[in-house]
Length: 225
Image (cartoon, rainbow, N blue to C red; front, side):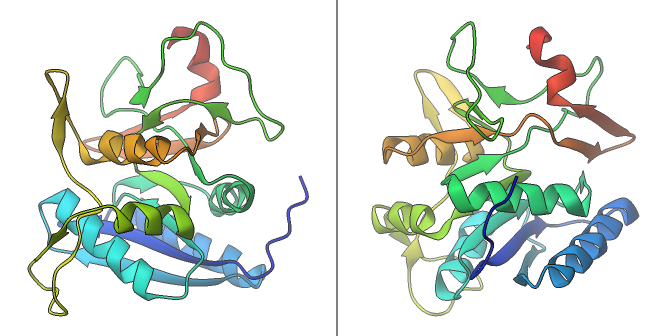
């Protein structure tokens, strides 16, 4: 896969309100090395201490929009990944508006938090990515114009620690058809409502850190989903 990464500047956004596992720190350092080695500019935006995750995500997204970064890359503070997979998803993000990898829930047997649309088969695109409705936001790359369009249509609210006036409420938790929704599925619904497809790269293997590390690759369990 040959994709032009010229002009890409990525902001890695990580909400956290607890200690970060050493495995996650190692992944961050490896990612920084990979980005520097490939001459890709980057920033890290950590929202530290915010236990209300949709507030933390909104603040991080607002800082992203005030920056000159071209891509917002969400990584949760309990993810374990390889730098080459970060680079792969970022490359996918130059040609796809919103692309993500699925990670296993902290549970056994292995299952994934992926929102499907009920079809029996999914046709991969030329990059091997599958069109799905959404997933957890733990490893997700979004182009700048997508975040900006969501911000443009969002109500303005005041948040703690943001002193420059009300900002767009880009993330929220809500309900739909009698079901409670987290900020991730609500966000992906907003993305698709704007006419963008949300894509899953099933080839990336992620670790999800809890009392143990739950590790799996979506491709290996695709038929079980």
